[in-house]
Amino acid sequence: MKSENVVKEEKALKLLDDYRHGNQNAFTALYNLYVVSLLNYGSCLTSDRELVKDCVHDVFVKLLTKCKSQKITKVGSYLFISLRNRLTDEFRRYAFSTDTPITDLKVKRYDESAEAKYIENEHDERMHANVVKLFRELTPRQQKAFKLYFIEQRKYDEICEILNMNYPCVRNLVHRGMLKLRSSETYQQLKTVAD
Image (cartoon, rainbow, N blue to C red; front, top):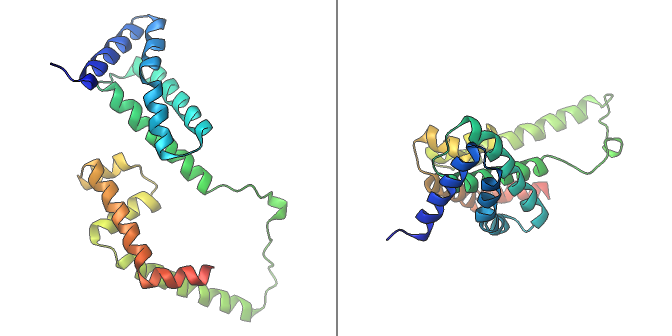
């Protein structure tokens, strides 16, 4: 006897195939088959319900365009991974954006004294040394994962391929690395200076 997920996946593949052959109602049925599960999954990742709805919508729009040119073999996996990636992209975008108008930002003076520049450079060098020290507290594999995720801004799926690891292992690697860094003495010192 087939599991519920296998039956759902087979139904989704059939609906996707029907849509490719011109049945517009098949896509609506596919949407209805997964929308509640995707909304619930997205709500586990963020409490911003409107953001989740927008991202679910984007995922289905992407599926509309992609299914015509590419063969999708696991519809459920494709939808959930796409939603997670779409939300991650939004989280990153929010992390690097600001609501502060550019006119309110502090403009750095160019006529600073040599002493002020020296102090600023010394502070920057100390911070850089502390970050390097902090990074060295990670294992070599954690360092690779951090570099790929935080510096190169790669998605977990790409990191899995590069490191030849499965998805849960990569997530666990990054998570354990963050816990290790946050518990380190160097991190506590940096946090104190930043506050």
